[in-house]
Length: 206
Length: 160
Image 1 (spheres, each protein chain N blue to C red):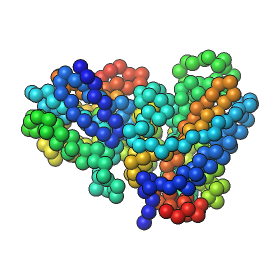
Image 2: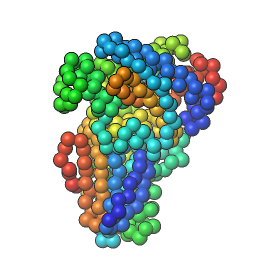
Image 3: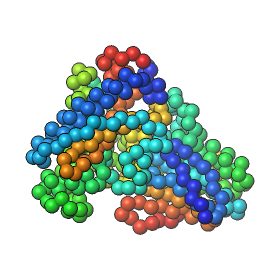
Image 4: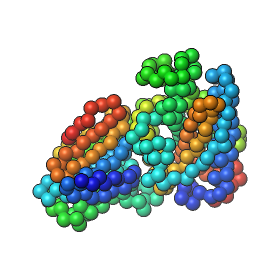
């Protein structure tokens, strides 16, 4: 029986998540830098523990269009994860990848959409491998799914996942970038039994 | 005219000429009920279908069953006649085209079903709905006319 309740999440788990955020963002930065063939710096990630009232506005206004990439997490733990990008960051990344001028802001075409999925895949993989190496567990992910829609609507998906065992959600925010800052938001949603597995493997007692 | 905003897992009431809204419904459902004669209404933004399936169910506005019950109670407390109440619902999208029957895959549909079932149980006619598909919706209820306005990215405003 799962003991985990997000509302009683402790300091240590917070620190662990911060570390996963740090290592994951580091891995992601290297991956993005290789992909775009340019130097990319990273800010220290910020971790927030938010209520449902705060979540829809955590990354932008509720109705602002954002990009959401969703993957299911499999193998030793189950659950899902999401990576969110603001529209200007998504355009910036795609333009660089496609060799277009920075200010190109036409609607994404099919090619752009698969490029975004791939970016999401790489970035999510960076976080997952951080989690995997910290917990010594095998963690794999499904193919990425993409949605470009209102921030609150996309965030309803993690909210519902978290809603099944509490009234809060955890958000890891990372800023990458050189001249232009790319803001990415990462949400890890282990299912309730997997929380226990993660914490146990890290030696954290509830 | 004031605008009353309802958050996620939240509900509130509204009297004409004011308007009540909730922004960016994804797989969640916005349930509007109103008394067309007294022009008193309310809006709930529920996230999950069934409170009895959860251990942690203290937030009643989070679930279709307890949320709709509370919404109706609040609207009646504000003066609405329960026998005159009618409802309209929107939301319940599948935001990501995930295969299979995972939570993310079908929670929108289950939310819509649970909302319909609860309204039926309370004897409140469901006049119209705009649910399912794969996009987010902002909804606005105008108790003055009973209009339920639905906005989505890249789509024209719909009124049900």
